[in-house]
Image 1 (cartoon, helix red, strand yellow):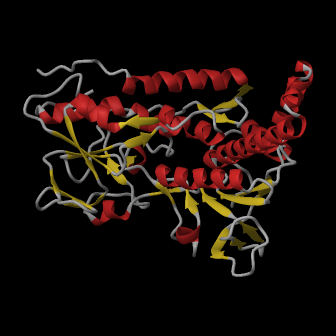
Image 2 (cartoon, one colour):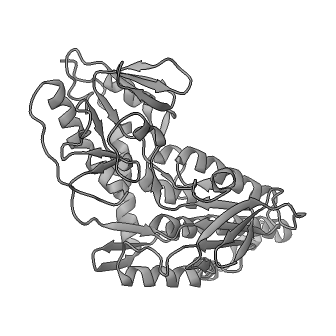
Image 3 (tube, helix red, strand yellow):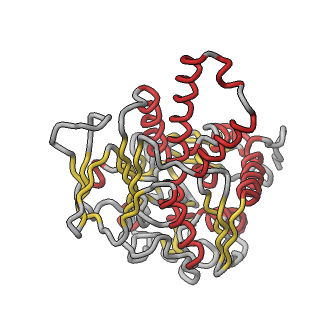
Length: 409
């Protein structure tokens, strides 16, 4: 938006610890293997070039308000007159001993994807060995992750079986009855509980996905159980540690999860998808923050303590409009954030913004179907997945189909 409508005399600097920003809406599909890396990542270099913006690859770790500096992890501090903070959130791990050291948090996304891709590579190299995965957190993110992970692991196993079949029977084996092939594909989609991998989903609540209606919660629980995903409800994880005993599983580094109930679970990978937490340096820098450490902003997305600081996305907590940490709110804050940054720079009154009270949640079930959830409404269909796929692709095209020349007024 700054590239399309620049302001004279304003110099933009983007501080990012990655050059390719992941789009959260397509990440479950990427985990399942429906999208490749480029399809679900925004190339920040080309975007910054279009906007006439300097990009610094680093991570912000503090703000010095006495000198108006952003302190970075490796490079020199960066001066600012106006600052916009949108650093997202990470799952809370600090309260559980061993979780920060041994579990893989769903965010930051680049680190999560690196671990997931490494796991897939290991499966390809050692397909016959058993694999146990634990996912901690039964919200929408944890449920969707479990279903899409299982879908991808199922695809890897089917690929291996096809390769073994070709090796055993020759190419003619795969050219049999088309109807039989179609029936086989349908059965594989409906029944994935015979995989050599096992997924455990642990949740501290009595029901999954507390923020959704009863029909949605019940249906997703049915799907998880039918797929053979092991549900552990009312299980609060109290410790994560490395398993010191000799491993009988595939991966050399195995871990143990301990729950308050006494349940102990051995696994090869632990993915952490619990309630969002904020970076400590937000509050430590002196920005007004809520009880959970998230930056407090007013209706104009402006810090309530520092007028020249704005915030959006997960890291921001709107004082008058508390909302869940969901990507739909972050995306819709983009335009009002841009408008208020420009209004502030021009010395004009800011424009208040009111987010919607309810939002349509689309939960992918790993088989190119989705469940729509909004208030008391629920709908399950393949059409929903393809509709979401179309919306996501249209959104991402905005960042690749940039105008050839930008406005330089």
